[in-house]
Image (cartoon, rainbow, N blue to C red; front, side):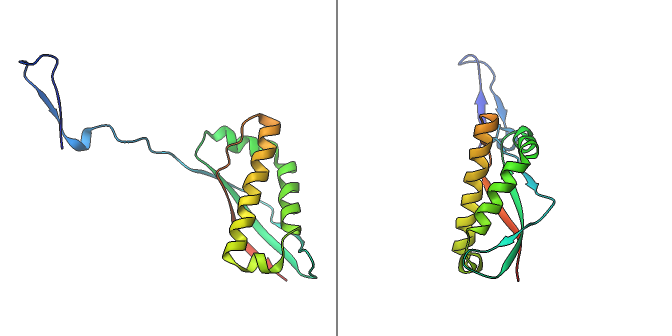
Length: 131
């Protein structure tokens, strides 16, 4: 498909090939993975979990910079979520997705409070060990 551009009805038309036409914007996703794993006890269990967590955004890099700056309260919130999780939740895909959603919401709540702009679109459990 081509678009024909003409300023007057009788002017010579210029045809622009479809591949040269503007495309929908491409959003770049940026990731931030916490360097140190999260280690803690599980709810109603003698087991300990160790998890690596990453956050993603398609907003500006300033969102991830805000995560770096406010890492301490975000880490505390993540540890609280993990320690309130059960072994069954961490073993099931649905349970992990629920925990990732809770982490996303907690990180955004902290960024909204501290920076007045949330921007984390998803949290990922990138590594998980239970002992």
